[in-house]
Length: 266
Length: 303
Image 1 (cartoon, rainbow over the protein chains, first blue to last red):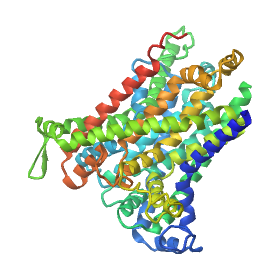
Image 2 (cartoon, rainbow over the protein chains, first blue to last red):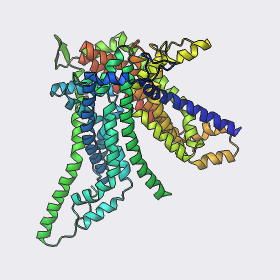
Image 3 (spheres, rainbow over the protein chains, first blue to last red):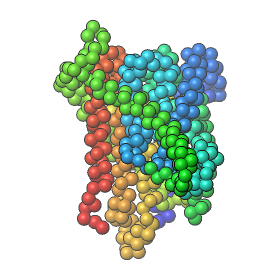
Protein backbone atom coordinates (compact mmCIF):
# COMPACT_ATOMS: atom_id res chain seq x y z
CA UNK A 1 0.00 0.00 0.00
CA UNK A 2 2.76 2.42 0.94
CA UNK A 3 4.67 1.31 -2.17
CA UNK A 4 1.63 1.93 -4.37
CA UNK A 5 1.15 5.37 -2.86
CA UNK A 6 4.79 6.17 -3.53
CA UNK A 7 4.48 5.04 -7.16
CA UNK A 8 1.33 7.14 -7.64
CA UNK A 9 3.03 10.20 -6.18
CA UNK A 10 6.09 9.74 -8.37
CA UNK A 11 3.91 9.20 -11.45
CA UNK A 12 2.01 12.40 -10.66
CA UNK A 13 5.26 14.33 -10.22
CA UNK A 14 6.54 12.98 -13.53
CA UNK A 15 3.33 14.16 -15.19
CA UNK A 16 3.71 17.63 -13.73
CA UNK A 17 7.31 17.80 -14.92
CA UNK A 18 6.10 16.69 -18.35
CA UNK A 19 3.67 19.64 -18.39
CA UNK A 20 6.45 22.02 -17.41
CA UNK A 21 9.03 20.69 -19.86
CA UNK A 22 6.87 19.65 -22.83
CA UNK A 23 6.95 23.18 -24.36
CA UNK A 24 10.75 23.28 -24.17
CA UNK A 25 11.27 19.78 -25.54
CA UNK A 26 8.73 20.10 -28.34
CA UNK A 27 10.21 23.41 -29.50
CA UNK A 28 13.59 21.74 -29.93
CA UNK A 29 12.14 18.62 -31.57
CA UNK A 30 9.94 20.51 -34.04
CA UNK A 31 12.71 22.94 -34.95
CA UNK A 32 14.21 19.99 -36.91
CA UNK A 33 10.87 18.95 -38.44
CA UNK A 34 10.53 19.18 -42.23
CA UNK A 35 6.75 19.83 -42.10
CA UNK A 36 5.52 23.36 -42.05
CA UNK A 37 2.99 22.70 -39.32
CA UNK A 38 4.31 21.11 -36.15
CA UNK A 39 2.08 18.07 -35.72
CA UNK A 40 2.28 14.32 -35.48
CA UNK A 41 3.48 12.32 -37.28
CA UNK A 42 6.97 13.73 -37.56
CA UNK A 43 7.71 14.92 -41.09
CA UNK A 44 11.38 14.06 -41.34
CA UNK A 45 14.63 15.73 -40.32
CA UNK A 46 15.44 19.10 -41.78
CA UNK A 47 17.59 22.11 -41.07
CA UNK A 48 15.58 24.40 -43.32
CA UNK A 49 14.15 26.52 -40.48
CA UNK A 50 17.63 27.18 -39.16
CA UNK A 51 18.72 28.14 -42.68
CA UNK A 52 15.68 30.44 -42.90
CA UNK A 53 16.49 32.31 -39.68
CA UNK A 54 20.18 32.63 -40.53
CA UNK A 55 19.15 34.34 -43.76
CA UNK A 56 16.76 36.71 -41.98
CA UNK A 57 18.45 40.06 -41.37
CA UNK A 58 15.96 41.19 -38.70
CA UNK A 59 16.57 38.05 -36.66
CA UNK A 60 20.33 38.42 -36.99
CA UNK A 61 20.12 42.02 -35.85
CA UNK A 62 17.91 40.96 -32.95
CA UNK A 63 20.42 38.32 -31.90
CA UNK A 64 23.33 40.77 -32.06
CA UNK A 65 21.35 43.36 -30.06
CA UNK A 66 20.42 40.74 -27.46
CA UNK A 67 24.03 39.64 -27.09
CA UNK A 68 25.24 43.23 -26.69
CA UNK A 69 22.53 44.03 -24.14
CA UNK A 70 23.10 40.82 -22.16
CA UNK A 71 26.88 41.22 -22.32
CA UNK A 72 26.84 44.74 -20.89
CA UNK A 73 23.97 44.08 -18.46
CA UNK A 74 25.64 41.09 -16.82
CA UNK A 75 28.82 43.04 -16.03
CA UNK A 76 27.07 46.10 -14.56
CA UNK A 77 24.42 44.08 -12.72
CA UNK A 78 26.99 41.75 -11.20
CA UNK A 79 29.10 44.68 -10.02
CA UNK A 80 26.05 46.42 -8.49
CA UNK A 81 24.72 43.17 -7.02
CA UNK A 82 28.11 42.34 -5.52
CA UNK A 83 28.38 45.84 -4.03
CA UNK A 84 24.92 45.72 -2.49
CA UNK A 85 25.51 42.23 -1.07
CA UNK A 86 28.86 43.32 0.38
CA UNK A 87 27.30 46.41 1.98
CA UNK A 88 24.63 44.19 3.54
CA UNK A 89 27.33 41.79 4.79
CA UNK A 90 29.80 44.39 6.06
CA UNK A 91 27.90 47.37 7.47
CA UNK A 92 25.04 48.22 9.74
CA UNK A 93 23.51 51.64 9.34
CA UNK A 94 20.31 53.62 9.68
CA UNK A 95 17.96 52.96 6.76
CA UNK A 96 19.67 49.73 5.77
CA UNK A 97 16.36 47.95 5.24
CA UNK A 98 15.28 50.72 2.85
CA UNK A 99 18.61 50.39 1.06
CA UNK A 100 18.18 46.64 0.68
CA UNK A 101 14.55 46.92 -0.38
CA UNK A 102 15.49 49.41 -3.07
CA UNK A 103 18.14 47.03 -4.38
CA UNK A 104 16.05 43.86 -4.15
CA UNK A 105 12.48 44.84 -5.03
CA UNK A 106 12.43 45.29 -8.84
CA UNK A 107 11.60 41.63 -9.71
CA UNK A 108 8.41 41.84 -7.62
CA UNK A 109 7.04 44.64 -9.80
CA UNK A 110 5.38 43.27 -12.95
CA UNK A 111 7.63 43.84 -15.96
CA UNK A 112 4.75 45.41 -17.86
CA UNK A 113 4.72 48.22 -15.28
CA UNK A 114 8.51 48.56 -15.21
CA UNK A 115 8.34 48.71 -19.00
CA UNK A 116 5.82 51.58 -19.10
CA UNK A 117 7.60 53.44 -16.31
CA UNK A 118 10.96 53.17 -18.07
CA UNK A 119 9.44 54.11 -21.42
CA UNK A 120 7.88 57.32 -20.12
CA UNK A 121 10.92 58.21 -18.02
CA UNK A 122 13.52 57.39 -20.65
CA UNK A 123 11.55 59.33 -23.22
CA UNK A 124 12.27 62.42 -21.09
CA UNK A 125 16.01 61.85 -20.88
CA UNK A 126 16.52 60.68 -24.46
CA UNK A 127 17.24 57.02 -23.71
CA UNK A 128 14.13 55.39 -25.14
CA UNK A 129 14.66 53.55 -28.39
CA UNK A 130 18.33 52.93 -27.63
CA UNK A 131 20.16 49.81 -26.56
CA UNK A 132 21.41 51.80 -23.57
CA UNK A 133 17.79 52.29 -22.56
CA UNK A 134 17.21 48.53 -22.60
CA UNK A 135 20.45 47.85 -20.70
CA UNK A 136 19.44 50.35 -17.99
CA UNK A 137 16.17 48.49 -17.42
CA UNK A 138 17.75 45.04 -17.55
CA UNK A 139 20.33 46.06 -14.95
CA UNK A 140 17.52 47.22 -12.64
CA UNK A 141 15.75 43.88 -13.05
CA UNK A 142 18.76 41.55 -12.78
CA UNK A 143 20.85 43.22 -10.05
CA UNK A 144 18.78 41.57 -7.26
CA UNK A 145 19.59 38.11 -8.65
CA UNK A 146 23.33 38.87 -8.57
CA UNK A 147 22.93 40.33 -5.09
CA UNK A 148 21.18 37.19 -3.81
CA UNK A 149 23.86 34.86 -5.18
CA UNK A 150 26.78 36.85 -3.73
CA UNK A 151 25.01 37.34 -0.39
CA UNK A 152 24.48 33.58 -0.11
CA UNK A 153 28.21 33.06 -0.62
CA UNK A 154 29.20 35.80 1.85
CA UNK A 155 27.04 34.16 4.51
CA UNK A 156 29.75 31.47 4.66
CA UNK A 157 32.58 33.96 5.27
CA UNK A 158 33.28 34.79 8.91
CA UNK A 159 33.05 38.61 9.24
CA UNK A 160 35.88 38.49 11.80
CA UNK A 161 38.35 37.55 9.06
CA UNK A 162 37.96 40.92 7.40
CA UNK A 163 38.00 42.76 10.73
CA UNK A 164 41.19 40.94 11.69
CA UNK A 165 42.84 41.87 8.37
CA UNK A 166 41.90 45.53 8.87
CA UNK A 167 43.22 45.56 12.44
CA UNK A 168 46.48 43.96 11.35
CA UNK A 169 47.00 46.95 9.06
CA UNK A 170 45.75 45.71 5.70
CA UNK A 171 43.88 48.45 3.85
CA UNK A 172 40.21 47.79 3.12
CA UNK A 173 41.08 47.65 -0.58
CA UNK A 174 43.78 45.04 -0.07
CA UNK A 175 41.38 42.97 2.03
CA UNK A 176 38.67 43.32 -0.59
CA UNK A 177 40.83 42.09 -3.44
CA UNK A 178 42.90 39.67 -1.39
CA UNK A 179 40.12 38.01 0.61
CA UNK A 180 36.55 38.97 -0.27
CA UNK A 181 36.66 38.90 -4.07
CA UNK A 182 38.61 35.62 -4.33
CA UNK A 183 36.21 34.02 -1.83
CA UNK A 184 33.18 35.24 -3.82
CA UNK A 185 34.57 34.34 -7.23
CA UNK A 186 32.30 31.32 -7.88
CA UNK A 187 29.23 33.38 -6.92
CA UNK A 188 30.43 36.29 -9.05
CA UNK A 189 30.72 34.08 -12.11
CA UNK A 190 27.37 32.45 -11.33
CA UNK A 191 25.88 35.95 -11.10
CA UNK A 192 27.38 36.92 -14.46
CA UNK A 193 25.81 33.88 -16.12
CA UNK A 194 22.45 34.26 -14.38
CA UNK A 195 22.05 37.98 -15.05
CA UNK A 196 23.06 37.40 -18.67
CA UNK A 197 20.28 34.79 -18.90
CA UNK A 198 17.74 37.15 -17.30
CA UNK A 199 18.65 39.89 -19.77
CA UNK A 200 18.83 37.57 -22.78
CA UNK A 201 15.27 36.32 -22.15
CA UNK A 202 13.68 39.58 -21.00
CA UNK A 203 11.06 40.73 -23.48
CA UNK A 204 8.64 43.13 -21.79
CA UNK A 205 10.93 46.04 -20.83
CA UNK A 206 12.75 45.55 -24.12
CA UNK A 207 9.44 45.55 -26.00
CA UNK A 208 8.36 48.89 -24.53
CA UNK A 209 11.73 50.60 -24.65
CA UNK A 210 13.45 49.17 -27.73
CA UNK A 211 11.77 51.10 -30.54
CA UNK A 212 13.47 49.99 -33.75
CA UNK A 213 16.38 48.38 -31.89
CA UNK A 214 14.58 45.07 -31.33
CA UNK A 215 16.19 42.36 -29.25
CA UNK A 216 15.63 38.72 -30.14
CA UNK A 217 12.76 38.08 -27.67
CA UNK A 218 11.01 41.22 -28.97
CA UNK A 219 11.37 39.85 -32.51
CA UNK A 220 9.87 36.56 -31.30
CA UNK A 221 6.96 38.45 -29.75
CA UNK A 222 6.37 40.22 -33.08
CA UNK A 223 6.51 36.89 -34.92
CA UNK A 224 3.97 35.37 -32.50
CA UNK A 225 1.48 37.95 -33.70
CA UNK A 226 1.71 36.57 -37.24
CA UNK A 227 1.14 33.12 -38.68
CA UNK A 228 2.33 29.87 -37.19
CA UNK A 229 5.93 29.78 -38.24
CA UNK A 230 8.33 26.89 -37.66
CA UNK A 231 11.09 29.49 -37.68
CA UNK A 232 10.00 30.41 -34.16
CA UNK A 233 10.89 26.86 -33.12
CA UNK A 234 14.36 27.27 -34.58
CA UNK A 235 14.88 30.61 -32.80
CA UNK A 236 13.38 29.09 -29.66
CA UNK A 237 15.80 26.16 -29.77
CA UNK A 238 18.76 28.54 -30.09
CA UNK A 239 17.44 30.80 -27.34
CA UNK A 240 16.86 27.79 -25.06
CA UNK A 241 20.35 26.49 -25.80
CA UNK A 242 21.90 29.84 -24.84
CA UNK A 243 19.90 30.37 -21.65
CA UNK A 244 20.06 26.76 -20.48
CA UNK A 245 23.85 26.81 -20.95
CA UNK A 246 24.07 29.99 -18.86
CA UNK A 247 21.81 28.58 -16.14
CA UNK A 248 23.67 25.28 -15.99
CA UNK A 249 27.00 27.09 -15.66
CA UNK A 250 25.55 29.23 -12.88
CA UNK A 251 24.12 26.21 -11.09
CA UNK A 252 27.27 24.14 -11.36
CA UNK A 253 29.23 26.99 -9.78
CA UNK A 254 26.61 27.38 -7.05
CA UNK A 255 26.34 23.62 -6.60
CA UNK A 256 30.05 23.47 -5.80
CA UNK A 257 29.49 26.18 -3.17
CA UNK A 258 26.42 24.50 -1.67
CA UNK A 259 28.15 21.12 -1.67
CA UNK A 260 31.12 22.49 0.24
CA UNK A 261 28.85 24.26 2.74
CA UNK A 262 26.85 21.08 3.29
CA UNK A 263 30.01 19.04 3.86
CA UNK A 264 31.26 21.57 6.36
CA UNK A 265 28.01 21.50 8.30
CA UNK A 266 27.58 17.73 8.14
CA UNK B 1 28.59 50.90 11.43
CA UNK B 2 30.48 47.98 12.86
CA UNK B 3 33.88 49.44 11.96
CA UNK B 4 36.89 47.75 13.47
CA UNK B 5 38.37 49.87 16.27
CA UNK B 6 41.31 51.97 15.13
CA UNK B 7 44.59 51.23 16.84
CA UNK B 8 45.12 53.32 19.99
CA UNK B 9 46.77 56.65 19.14
CA UNK B 10 49.03 58.52 21.50
CA UNK B 11 50.66 61.32 19.49
CA UNK B 12 49.20 63.79 17.02
CA UNK B 13 51.05 62.23 14.06
CA UNK B 14 49.30 58.87 14.48
CA UNK B 15 46.06 60.74 15.13
CA UNK B 16 46.33 62.39 11.73
CA UNK B 17 47.11 59.02 10.23
CA UNK B 18 44.05 57.59 11.95
CA UNK B 19 41.81 60.34 10.69
CA UNK B 20 43.07 59.88 7.13
CA UNK B 21 42.51 56.16 7.57
CA UNK B 22 39.00 56.94 8.67
CA UNK B 23 38.49 59.08 5.54
CA UNK B 24 39.83 56.22 3.43
CA UNK B 25 37.39 53.83 4.99
CA UNK B 26 34.51 56.23 4.47
CA UNK B 27 35.50 56.59 0.80
CA UNK B 28 35.70 52.83 0.57
CA UNK B 29 32.21 52.37 2.05
CA UNK B 30 30.76 54.95 -0.33
CA UNK B 31 32.51 53.38 -3.32
CA UNK B 32 30.69 50.08 -2.73
CA UNK B 33 27.50 51.42 -1.20
CA UNK B 34 26.58 54.27 -3.49
CA UNK B 35 26.42 52.71 -6.99
CA UNK B 36 23.62 50.18 -6.36
CA UNK B 37 21.56 52.74 -4.46
CA UNK B 38 22.04 55.43 -7.09
CA UNK B 39 21.29 53.10 -9.99
CA UNK B 40 18.11 51.65 -8.47
CA UNK B 41 16.99 55.10 -7.34
CA UNK B 42 17.56 56.67 -10.75
CA UNK B 43 16.18 53.88 -12.93
CA UNK B 44 13.68 52.10 -10.67
CA UNK B 45 12.34 54.47 -8.03
CA UNK B 46 12.31 57.66 -10.10
CA UNK B 47 10.60 56.05 -13.13
CA UNK B 48 7.92 54.56 -10.86
CA UNK B 49 7.34 57.94 -9.20
CA UNK B 50 7.30 59.55 -12.62
CA UNK B 51 4.68 57.01 -13.67
CA UNK B 52 2.51 58.01 -10.70
CA UNK B 53 3.02 61.70 -11.49
CA UNK B 54 2.04 61.09 -15.08
CA UNK B 55 -1.39 59.80 -14.02
CA UNK B 56 -2.21 63.50 -13.38
CA UNK B 57 -0.94 64.73 -16.75
CA UNK B 58 -3.09 65.49 -19.74
CA UNK B 59 -2.88 64.78 -23.44
CA UNK B 60 -3.61 67.71 -25.74
CA UNK B 61 -3.40 67.34 -29.51
CA UNK B 62 -1.60 64.02 -29.05
CA UNK B 63 1.03 65.75 -26.90
CA UNK B 64 1.75 65.09 -23.26
CA UNK B 65 1.48 68.09 -20.99
CA UNK B 66 2.34 68.23 -17.28
CA UNK B 67 -0.87 68.92 -15.40
CA UNK B 68 -2.63 68.14 -12.16
CA UNK B 69 -5.90 66.80 -13.44
CA UNK B 70 -7.86 63.88 -12.06
CA UNK B 71 -9.46 63.30 -15.46
CA UNK B 72 -7.42 60.18 -16.21
CA UNK B 73 -8.34 58.63 -12.88
CA UNK B 74 -12.06 59.36 -13.24
CA UNK B 75 -12.03 58.19 -16.85
CA UNK B 76 -10.36 54.86 -16.09
CA UNK B 77 -12.08 54.17 -12.76
CA UNK B 78 -15.55 54.77 -14.19
CA UNK B 79 -14.92 52.97 -17.48
CA UNK B 80 -16.79 49.70 -17.78
CA UNK B 81 -13.99 48.10 -19.80
CA UNK B 82 -11.55 48.81 -16.99
CA UNK B 83 -13.78 47.36 -14.29
CA UNK B 84 -14.37 44.23 -16.36
CA UNK B 85 -10.67 43.83 -17.07
CA UNK B 86 -9.83 44.38 -13.41
CA UNK B 87 -12.28 41.79 -12.11
CA UNK B 88 -11.30 39.34 -14.86
CA UNK B 89 -7.55 39.71 -14.24
CA UNK B 90 -7.92 39.46 -10.48
CA UNK B 91 -10.17 36.43 -10.64
CA UNK B 92 -8.03 34.56 -13.17
CA UNK B 93 -4.84 35.28 -11.22
CA UNK B 94 -6.42 34.13 -7.97
CA UNK B 95 -7.68 30.99 -9.71
CA UNK B 96 -4.18 30.38 -11.08
CA UNK B 97 -2.63 30.79 -7.63
CA UNK B 98 -5.13 28.27 -6.26
CA UNK B 99 -4.74 25.71 -9.07
CA UNK B 100 -0.95 26.05 -9.08
CA UNK B 101 -0.80 25.62 -5.29
CA UNK B 102 -3.02 22.55 -5.34
CA UNK B 103 -1.39 20.98 -8.41
CA UNK B 104 2.11 21.60 -7.10
CA UNK B 105 1.53 20.21 -3.61
CA UNK B 106 1.67 16.45 -4.33
CA UNK B 107 4.79 17.00 -6.44
CA UNK B 108 6.44 19.14 -3.75
CA UNK B 109 5.46 16.50 -1.16
CA UNK B 110 7.05 13.81 -3.31
CA UNK B 111 10.24 15.82 -3.86
CA UNK B 112 10.51 16.74 -0.19
CA UNK B 113 9.82 13.33 1.37
CA UNK B 114 9.72 10.50 -1.16
CA UNK B 115 12.90 10.76 -3.20
CA UNK B 116 16.60 10.56 -2.38
CA UNK B 117 18.47 13.81 -1.66
CA UNK B 118 20.41 13.42 -4.92
CA UNK B 119 17.19 13.11 -6.94
CA UNK B 120 15.73 16.08 -5.08
CA UNK B 121 18.78 18.20 -5.93
CA UNK B 122 18.52 17.23 -9.59
CA UNK B 123 14.79 18.02 -9.72
CA UNK B 124 15.31 21.40 -8.02
CA UNK B 125 18.10 22.07 -10.50
CA UNK B 126 15.67 21.28 -13.35
CA UNK B 127 12.87 23.44 -11.95
CA UNK B 128 15.09 26.51 -11.96
CA UNK B 129 15.71 26.17 -15.69
CA UNK B 130 12.24 27.12 -17.06
CA UNK B 131 12.12 30.22 -14.88
CA UNK B 132 15.03 31.67 -16.84
CA UNK B 133 14.07 30.22 -20.22
CA UNK B 134 12.26 32.25 -22.87
CA UNK B 135 8.67 32.41 -21.74
CA UNK B 136 7.20 33.67 -25.07
CA UNK B 137 8.68 30.68 -26.88
CA UNK B 138 7.20 28.31 -24.30
CA UNK B 139 3.83 29.98 -24.78
CA UNK B 140 4.17 29.62 -28.56
CA UNK B 141 4.87 25.96 -28.06
CA UNK B 142 1.85 25.58 -25.79
CA UNK B 143 -0.24 27.30 -28.44
CA UNK B 144 0.87 24.67 -30.96
CA UNK B 145 -0.02 21.86 -28.54
CA UNK B 146 -3.60 23.06 -28.16
CA UNK B 147 -4.20 24.22 -31.73
CA UNK B 148 -7.02 22.46 -33.63
CA UNK B 149 -4.54 20.31 -35.62
CA UNK B 150 -2.11 20.17 -32.68
CA UNK B 151 -0.76 17.19 -30.81
CA UNK B 152 -3.41 17.13 -28.09
CA UNK B 153 -6.30 17.11 -30.53
CA UNK B 154 -4.60 14.54 -32.80
CA UNK B 155 -4.61 12.24 -29.80
CA UNK B 156 -8.02 13.17 -28.39
CA UNK B 157 -10.19 13.36 -31.53
CA UNK B 158 -9.77 9.69 -32.58
CA UNK B 159 -10.69 8.75 -29.01
CA UNK B 160 -13.91 10.70 -29.40
CA UNK B 161 -12.88 13.20 -26.73
CA UNK B 162 -12.17 16.23 -28.87
CA UNK B 163 -11.77 18.61 -30.36
CA UNK B 164 -10.66 20.51 -27.29
CA UNK B 165 -11.22 24.25 -27.54
CA UNK B 166 -8.62 25.89 -25.30
CA UNK B 167 -7.06 28.62 -27.44
CA UNK B 168 -8.69 32.05 -27.25
CA UNK B 169 -10.61 31.15 -24.10
CA UNK B 170 -10.01 32.02 -20.44
CA UNK B 171 -8.92 28.37 -20.01
CA UNK B 172 -6.11 29.09 -22.46
CA UNK B 173 -5.02 32.06 -20.39
CA UNK B 174 -4.96 29.97 -17.21
CA UNK B 175 -2.97 27.22 -18.95
CA UNK B 176 -0.43 29.88 -19.93
CA UNK B 177 -0.35 31.29 -16.40
CA UNK B 178 0.36 27.78 -15.14
CA UNK B 179 3.23 27.38 -17.62
CA UNK B 180 4.63 30.57 -16.09
CA UNK B 181 4.00 29.91 -12.41
CA UNK B 182 4.11 26.13 -11.78
CA UNK B 183 7.90 25.69 -11.78
CA UNK B 184 8.32 28.43 -9.19
CA UNK B 185 5.41 27.21 -7.03
CA UNK B 186 6.72 23.62 -7.00
CA UNK B 187 10.17 24.94 -6.11
CA UNK B 188 9.00 27.17 -3.25
CA UNK B 189 6.66 24.50 -1.87
CA UNK B 190 9.45 21.92 -1.98
CA UNK B 191 11.68 24.26 0.05
CA UNK B 192 8.82 24.93 2.47
CA UNK B 193 8.08 21.23 3.01
CA UNK B 194 11.76 20.31 3.29
CA UNK B 195 12.07 22.75 6.17
CA UNK B 196 9.32 21.11 8.23
CA UNK B 197 11.13 19.40 11.13
CA UNK B 198 11.17 15.66 10.40
CA UNK B 199 10.79 14.98 14.09
CA UNK B 200 7.28 16.52 14.06
CA UNK B 201 6.17 14.23 11.24
CA UNK B 202 7.68 11.15 12.92
CA UNK B 203 6.05 12.10 16.20
CA UNK B 204 2.67 12.38 14.46
CA UNK B 205 3.14 8.93 12.91
CA UNK B 206 4.23 7.40 16.19
CA UNK B 207 1.17 8.81 17.90
CA UNK B 208 -1.02 7.09 15.32
CA UNK B 209 -1.89 10.07 13.20
CA UNK B 210 -2.93 9.02 9.67
CA UNK B 211 -1.15 10.25 6.56
CA UNK B 212 -3.73 12.78 5.43
CA UNK B 213 -4.25 14.02 8.96
CA UNK B 214 -0.48 14.45 9.31
CA UNK B 215 -0.43 16.51 6.12
CA UNK B 216 -3.41 18.57 7.19
CA UNK B 217 -2.59 19.10 10.86
CA UNK B 218 1.21 18.93 10.99
CA UNK B 219 2.84 19.57 7.63
CA UNK B 220 0.62 22.32 6.21
CA UNK B 221 0.54 24.41 9.41
CA UNK B 222 4.32 24.09 9.81
CA UNK B 223 5.02 25.02 6.19
CA UNK B 224 2.31 27.68 6.13
CA UNK B 225 4.57 30.66 5.44
CA UNK B 226 6.32 29.01 2.49
CA UNK B 227 3.06 27.75 1.01
CA UNK B 228 1.47 31.20 1.21
CA UNK B 229 4.56 32.82 -0.29
CA UNK B 230 4.42 30.34 -3.20
CA UNK B 231 0.75 31.11 -3.87
CA UNK B 232 1.36 34.85 -3.61
CA UNK B 233 4.19 34.67 -6.15
CA UNK B 234 1.88 32.78 -8.51
CA UNK B 235 -0.74 35.51 -8.15
CA UNK B 236 1.76 38.32 -8.68
CA UNK B 237 3.29 36.70 -11.77
CA UNK B 238 -0.09 35.92 -13.33
CA UNK B 239 -1.54 39.33 -12.49
CA UNK B 240 1.20 41.13 -14.41
CA UNK B 241 1.59 38.69 -17.29
CA UNK B 242 0.94 39.92 -20.81
CA UNK B 243 1.93 36.96 -22.97
CA UNK B 244 -0.47 34.22 -21.86
CA UNK B 245 -3.69 36.29 -22.06
CA UNK B 246 -2.61 37.67 -25.44
CA UNK B 247 -1.44 34.54 -27.24
CA UNK B 248 -3.41 31.81 -25.46
CA UNK B 249 -6.41 33.82 -24.29
CA UNK B 250 -6.75 35.72 -27.56
CA UNK B 251 -6.89 39.12 -25.75
CA UNK B 252 -10.61 38.66 -25.26
CA UNK B 253 -11.54 39.77 -22.74
CA UNK B 254 -8.42 41.89 -22.20
CA UNK B 255 -6.47 41.78 -18.94
CA UNK B 256 -4.99 44.85 -17.26
CA UNK B 257 -1.57 44.26 -18.82
CA UNK B 258 -3.21 44.15 -22.25
CA UNK B 259 -5.00 47.44 -21.50
CA UNK B 260 -1.65 49.02 -20.63
CA UNK B 261 0.06 47.70 -23.74
CA UNK B 262 -2.82 48.85 -25.95
CA UNK B 263 -2.94 52.32 -24.43
CA UNK B 264 0.81 52.72 -24.87
CA UNK B 265 1.43 50.97 -28.17
CA UNK B 266 -1.59 51.99 -30.22
CA UNK B 267 -3.69 54.40 -28.18
CA UNK B 268 -0.60 56.40 -27.26
CA UNK B 269 -2.35 57.58 -24.13
CA UNK B 270 0.40 57.23 -21.57
CA UNK B 271 -1.39 58.94 -18.67
CA UNK B 272 -4.30 56.48 -18.90
CA UNK B 273 -1.88 53.55 -19.14
CA UNK B 274 -0.17 54.96 -16.05
CA UNK B 275 -3.46 54.98 -14.15
CA UNK B 276 -3.99 51.30 -14.97
CA UNK B 277 -0.40 50.56 -13.91
CA UNK B 278 -0.92 52.49 -10.66
CA UNK B 279 -4.04 50.47 -9.82
CA UNK B 280 -2.05 47.29 -10.48
CA UNK B 281 0.74 48.42 -8.14
CA UNK B 282 -1.79 49.31 -5.43
CA UNK B 283 -3.56 45.97 -5.85
CA UNK B 284 -0.34 43.98 -5.62
CA UNK B 285 0.73 45.89 -2.52
CA UNK B 286 -2.63 45.17 -0.88
CA UNK B 287 -2.48 41.49 -1.83
CA UNK B 288 1.05 41.16 -0.47
CA UNK B 289 0.07 42.88 2.80
CA UNK B 290 -2.91 40.57 3.23
CA UNK B 291 -0.77 37.54 2.46
CA UNK B 292 1.95 38.61 4.90
CA UNK B 293 -0.75 39.06 7.55
CA UNK B 294 -2.07 35.57 6.74
CA UNK B 295 1.39 34.03 6.79
CA UNK B 296 2.70 35.61 9.98
CA UNK B 297 -0.61 36.30 11.73
CA UNK B 298 -2.10 34.52 14.69
CA UNK B 299 -1.73 30.78 14.69
CA UNK B 300 -5.33 29.83 15.41
CA UNK B 301 -4.61 29.12 19.07
CA UNK B 302 -2.21 26.34 18.21
CA UNK B 303 1.19 25.95 19.84
